[in-house]
Length: 83
Length: 223
Image (tube, rainbow over the protein chains, first blue to last red):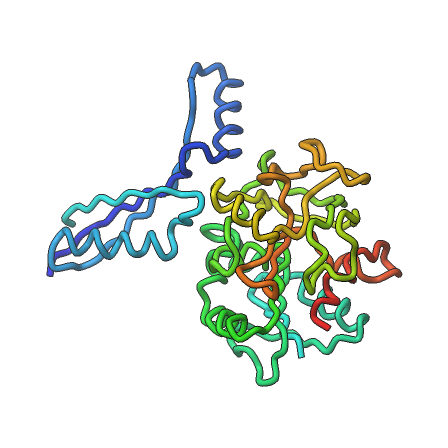
C-alpha cells in the first residue's frame, strides 16, 4: 500500500448560477480590479492508502459521487499525488 | 403516529409538533439516532440547519442512518413531507429530484410569500383548489430550486409540481420569485404522490393565534 493525497475539486456546472461568485466578483471590481469572470470551487484534500494511484482515484471519485458533490448541480475532478 | 425527525440543528420540530397537534394529528419528535419508532405512519423532516449546513444544506442529514429507514418507509407507502431544511434533505437523499441551493441574491430571506397551488389532486393539496393562492412564510438562504431542463419537463408532465411562487393574484412572475428558483418552483412531489418537499413553511402558518393559517391543508395531508 502507498500513501496518496487525492484532491477532489467540486464546482458548479456551467450554466448554474453562482451567487456567491457573482458577489465576490462585484466586490473585487469595487476594489478596482479588472476581471472578466470569476468561478468558485470547493477543494477537498483526502489522505488515503491505496494499492496504486488508480485505486486511490477510484475511491476518491466514489466519495465525490456519494457525498462531496451533488450531481444535479456539480461537476468534479480528482487528482492523485503520492504523499 | 407522525415522526418528526430531529437532527442536531433542527429548529422547526416543535412548531411542527404544535401545528400537527392543533390539527388533531398524533405526532412525536424523534431524535435521529433513535431511529423511526414502531407504529410510524408518517414522517416529517422539519426545517432548521441540520449539521450546521456543512458541505451543502441537508447533505449530511440525507446520509444519516435514519434516512435509510425513512426511504424504506416511503417505499412502503408511508407519507413523507420535507419542509425547508427537510426539503433540502429530501433532494440530497434523492427522494425528490433537483436541488435547493444558494438564493439568487446570496442572502438569507425571511418573509411571507405567495404560492399558487399547481396540483390540488394530492394528499398535501387536496384541501385547496388548483390555482388557489396561499400565503406562507419562507426562511432560507439555500432555497433556489435547481434542476435539469429534462427533469423539470418530466416533473411538469407528471404533474409533480405542487406549488409555484406567485403574486397574490396567482400570477407566476419573476418578481414574485423570492430566490431565483427555476420556473418559480416552491414544492414538488417525489416519484410517488405521498413524498413531498417544499421550501415555504406550512407549520408556521397553521395557528390562528400567531397569524396566517394557509398551511394547515398541507399538514392535513398526514391525516
